[in-house]
Image 1 (cartoon, rainbow, N blue to C red):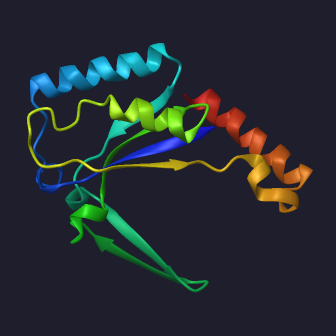
Image 2: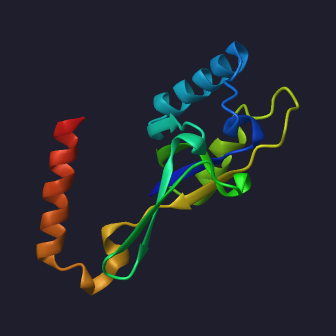
Length: 144
């Protein structure tokens, strides 16, 4: 199963405070463990919401854009991983090893969510739609 691991933002990440060399080294070592175990498919940090925008869709033609920053820091994402694991329990066990809050700073909250698989969509995901999806995945793979 694939899961996305969402690292929630906090006051420091929203202020653009960069991790220390020690924090970067610890996270690099953890990421290396994930890669060596065949777990990590991708992972990146995100700039603060002040550098982002939100697009709201309201009806068939209503589109509005709001520039960041966004008020509710606890609902924002500061970074993510994409992992391939056997189960949610395995994902939780890996996440417990992450070197967050090693220096006793503000608490860090991380959310793990499963990613939909083809079978999850049932009969609505017709053979034609499955073929289209596979063609797109193949093209994405060529772009990386």
